[in-house]
Length: 242
Image (cartoon, rainbow, N blue to C red; front, side, top):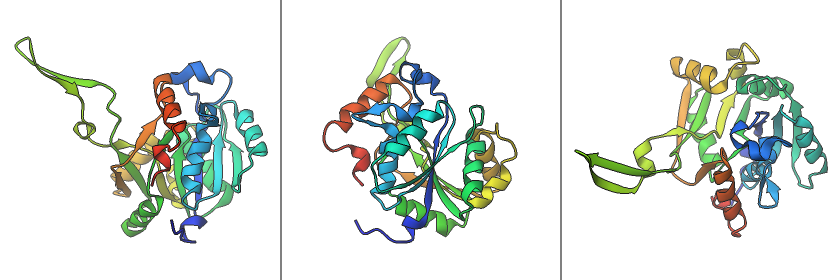
């Protein structure tokens, strides 16, 4: 892969401060981004998605059990520049993003969550964002097909089978590009990026969408953690196959 010097100049903010209550079996002693996928935390996998495409400058927004992440970063043997920032236990996603933006004052950032993996083409995402001239661009993905679909008529099953991902439309897959002016729209530390900031951008017609048809998988449950672990140990994880 040919890495452009331009894309490598854009830092990536990774949100890694949430409580991870839906996978509490793993998060009593560590933050969710430090849950192991294979022999490495999912946070490492997220960062390597960027690093393999030339983005090696990271800001990690920590909160819940932040010391675990800070200690891990201090021992990480990777050719990356990593700045973990303690953004507060009660701070929500928008507040964490604002703190990170204000800490370095770059004009533009990649932003993503510390618990979702995908083979996103980051250069295409960035180019689409630039062409749109919008404040932010979100990667739209197909939700994983978690359940089969059943159709019935007058008490009789007429169809039973796998649900197609395309039947469910598009959802927020993370992997954003944002301009630093987005911080001006975030007023409070307890504002949710998803519930407050993104709807504001929609109202202002300032949120673009990059549609990703490739691999994407969040880690919200123990079942999904096990799925990712199996793929990570297969020798060729799909989130690294761009």
